[in-house]
Structures are given as C-alpha cells and as structure tokens.
Length: 432
Ligand SMILES: Cc1ncc(COP(=O)(O)O)c(C=O)c1O
Ligand SMILES: N[C@@H](CCCC[NH3+])C(=O)O
Image 1: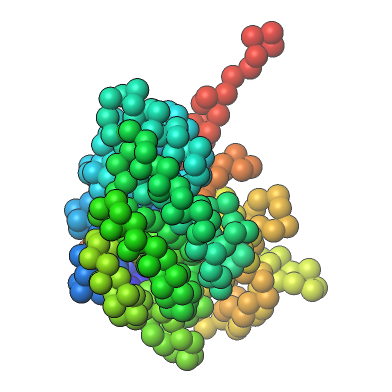
Image 2: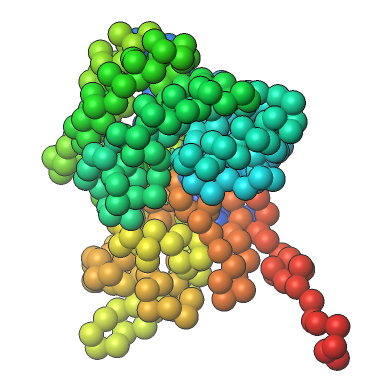
C-alpha cells in the first residue's frame, strides 16, 4: 500500500500534510513516504521467500542518501551503474560486498574504485571490459568477482527507450556468445566467475517476458554452474508499477486496478519464476528500482499562472522537465491531483513547466479541476527516475526532497543554492 491519502480535502503523506511541507520547504518539492518504501521492499522480499535471494536495489531509480540508508537498514544489496553510485552507497553506509556493478562503459578509475572497495560483483557487458577488469585486478594483486550480463534477445513489451534485452540494445553479451566468453574468462588469472546476470527492460507489466528470458537462459546457467561453480543468477529488475490510477489503486503493483487494468505483482512474478530458478540451486539476485521507489514519492508543485490560448488551457507550474523528465522523454503518464480538493469545474488542461522547450509538459489535454495561481498540485508516482534524472537546464536548481515517517518529516536534500550551479565554472584567464 502506498501512503498518500486525502484526509478530508487535504492530501497527506502518512501523517504529514503536503501543504505544511510545501510551506516549510518551498516548491518544487519531492516528498517520499518511508512506510511505502519499507512496505515495497518487504513485499518483494517476502514474495521471493521460496528461494535463497538478495534484492539489490537499483540505485539509479532514486539515489538520495537517506533512501539508500533506509535500503541498507532493510538488508538490501545495491545495483550500481557508476563509480559515483558506488561511492553514494558507501557514503550512505551501505555494504560494498552487497553491491553489483553494471554498465557498458566502466572506466579504469571506476573499476579500480570498485575493486578497492570490495564489491560483490562486476556485471560485465563486453569482452574488452572483461580484459580490462582482469588486468586491473592483476595490477592491484587481487581477484575480481565477475558475472557476465547475458542479452537473451527477448522482447520485453515495454517502451522502446527502456527495453534492454534484445540485440538492438547495447547491453550485455549476445546469448549465443556467452558460453564461449565464460570459457575464455576462466583462463584469465585474476577473474573469479561468480555468477550470471541479465536484465531485459524496465516498467514491464506482464510476467511473460520475464518467464521467456529466464526459461531461455536457465539451461545455460546450469551448464555454467556445473563447469565453474557459480554462486548466483541475477535476473535484474524491471517490475512495472501502476501509473494511470496510482492514487485510487492504493498499491504500487496490484493485480487489478480499479478500472480493471491488469498489473504484474511481485507475488505473481516470483510464483512464475521460482519454480524455474529453484532447481538451479543458486542464489537469486534481483535488481528492483522502480518497484521500490516509484509510488513512494510525489512531486509537489505550485501553480504560477493560468493561460488560455483559445485552443488550450495551460496550467503553468513551478516544476518542469528539469525535475521530472519522464513525460517529455517517454510520453509517460503521471497522475496529477490537487493537494487541496476543490469543487472547481473540470477543464482539459496542459500542465506545463517554465523551461524553454515545447516538450516541457506533465500532461496534455487532461481533465483537471481548474486550479488557480498559488494552488498546489501533486504529480504522483514520481519517486523513481524523477529526482534522479533531474538537471540544471535553464539554470534551475535541483529540487528539495523530504522524507516522511509517520508524523515526522525531514529535509533529505536541501534545494540546491543557485550559485552552486556555476560554482565549478570560471572565466578563461585572458578574459576580464
Ligand atoms: C541493469 C539494470 N538493473 C536494474 C534496473 C532497474 O530497473 P527497474 O527500475 O525497472 O526495476 C535497470 C533499469 O532498467 C537496469 O538497467
Ligand atoms: N529512466 C527510465 C527507466 C530506465 C531504467 C534504467 N535502465 C524511466 O523513467 O522509466
């Protein structure tokens, strides 16, 4: 269950009013519910109780230190995709030996950082990367734990920009080259073949692609395990969440939404995959990102102006694509609700930000109770790939973030001071 509810006409996160938070911290403001984050993690963890497993939270979804600290306290591992994400996890008190490191472009510096920290495993995405890791481990006099990321070439049936497991994508090693590559890797002296990894895409709302991929890869994993004594099979993340009826359905991933849309649940996901995975006798690693944080966060924004063009009604707000780029980038749907419910007439609106891009919108032609300047709106399901994809475009400071726990709230990221945006810039020496 997520914990964003109306009490009377006022929207709350757990026991704290959103209006109060907006007054205290200003807008645009991200607000996260600790209970929702905790419930989501535990729900997924319990769904997989039938097999030895470790959820490794995908840091890219939301990398705020307080959220990483919470995940570490819940016993999560971490999936990182850069040296920076690894250092964040360590800064948050997360254990290096529960970090898996994916990414197609790992630099020498990142690999050395990860080797020195003692990570659980590199998820290797090319033969050249494997050679590089082997050489750097030799230089450091250590052995590098590796898993090869398999690209199983299955269709994930999700948005084209977030599918990762076909040969059209840059990720992983083509399925039919994997066995050969393990054989070559086994001959290298500084590699420890520890597992196999895959990840087919994000925001999957059907179990079938997961099942297709796991069924296809499992026999290969069995052979590799027999040959090299592997410890784990990491099946990645990708569990989708409800976006379209986020508030009403009350649940981050529920079998059926109020309007009858069928969604994938972690229970169904596990129920279909555990029977295929358990006979392998390996620990199963999972890399959930969106499922953990997606519906645990909202973006609170204030209406600045209303503008009618004769063709459109624009609700112009103080958040923009710099705070939440998903609608601009993927045409993603995010539910938008008033922080204080009103009886205003429903009007078809475009809710837009102030960035100088026509693509800077949160919704188009959507019926909303027409707000007035000064009103607050909440953009829902914004906890994953929201703040984490924030940018300084148009010299806009990164938004503030607050975490709510029952009746308490804390600012877990202060709004970026505007001068901080240009603090590393300077005129060239020949300028005035
Ligand atoms: C390798 C890897 N693992 C995990 C994730 C997390 O995905 P999601 O947030 O969809 O669970 C991603 C992003 O798609 C990824 O690329
Ligand atoms: N950023 C994307 C998902 C990409 C997942 C990372 N591989 C989103 O907002 O949906």
